[in-house]
Image (cartoon, rainbow, N blue to C red; front, side, top):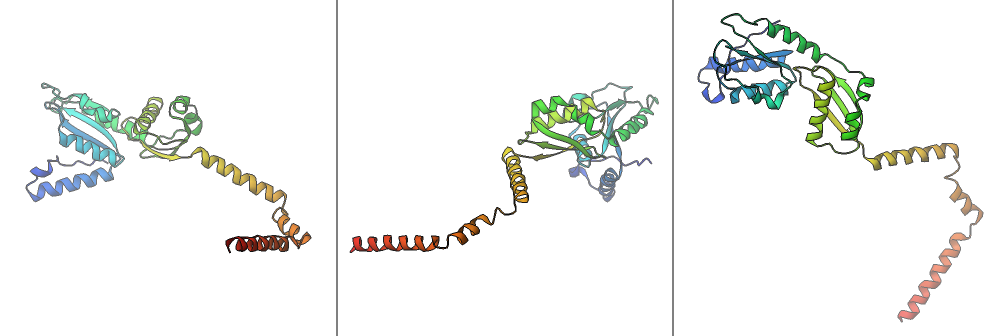
Length: 245
């Protein structure tokens, strides 16, 4: 199903109720869709409003395609403006001349398939480059639409490392036009040792259930131990009082 939405204007330039409700409906359509096709004017450079719409689509976790119209005229559009989202496919068309007008639909189907793609644990385990450079312990895919990965790391990962992980996943697997979400959890070395010690203690107690009874047994065998200690304490206390006087 295709949903056509009206063009969006800047918030400061919205004057009528029609423009306001059209912007609300556009945002609702973004949350409902699987793949969003953003059509921009190729005769001008990408505006701040266009970048804000792209950021909203990525934040919603939707697939995205950018269609540059009016290629029959002088093109001012530059893909350098998409450095913050290089995974987005860009298609050039001319609606006036009917050039490549069916390409966005074909690209949308490819992006839709990429959003549903699942990567097996075996294929992720083969990414030795990630384990060496970022020191991650394990990586698994936990969701689709958008593709979501869970990473267990032995240390806190920086933003640069997370971007490198995303770039490596995109280079190995075809997630064209789809944002990727990465969830990171840390497992420190001392926590690992602690869990090992806990397991060790529980295993020893299971094998030797009488370990806890050793101390009470010693007291039963020597009932005078407490008396001796109390007598010694009393003597020391008396000496201390004499020296004080």
